[in-house]
Image (tube, rainbow, N blue to C red; front, side):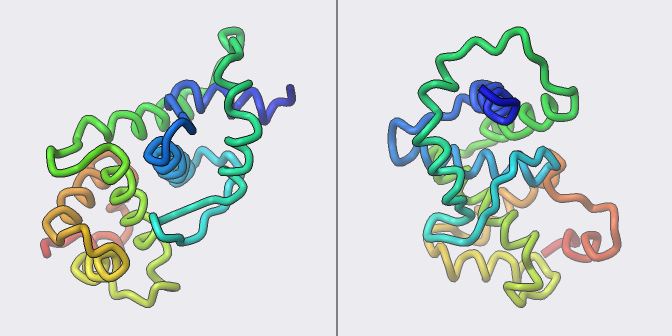
Length: 175
């Protein structure tokens, strides 16, 4: 087993990644996207697909390796503190789920909002949050503006969206 497999194994175990159901696979895709957005680069590239950000290479890797990775004991290995903190952020955002979501739709909304936000130039959207929400709801009409606002606030609160630079300050003004 190489270092990439070991790192993925530790991360996947800590994030309780599963491929057992369709919903589990959605959660896996979105959790890894969110983790990478925090700077923990596992090497997966994402594009937009029906359920939001999607990485074909992650799907292939999961199908080929997850069973072995989840059954291994990686207790003699450690991740650095920043990676551990990022995993905790990705896992803890599930604590903020509302009762109008199941876990896969919650992670789908979070990752989709963040993907569009991070790629707003290519999506040709303005800096206002309302433009972001409109772009998302055009792709995913099952989500409301109020749900988008709630999710965006949670992404900000957990540090997925920074308000440090002027552009983001403008985006984060009241709707």
